[in-house]
Length: 111
Image (cartoon, rainbow, N blue to C red; front, side, top):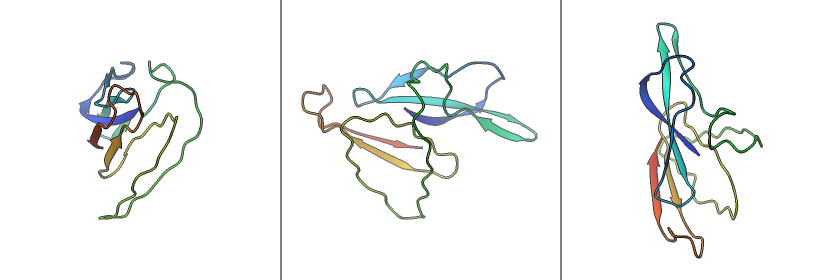
């Protein structure tokens, strides 16, 4: 799952945002609205009642310095939940799975 900022405000208790499928089979992109008021803002990254939630594994944080690249990592089977709470990240995915309906597709997102 990849969470993106849908912009605008969402009322409290409105539930999880609907998911849409990306250009690579199995990739889910979820737009997340921000809840904004005069004190600041919050946004849900992942909720246990999200339709795409599987289970909790771990959380880690990665910082990328300006104008630097953290490049290709190969995962055979992996569920990752990405979000970018500050700044902007270009995320590029490549489907290398033989037999996949989207084999050799590249999917690029800016978070």
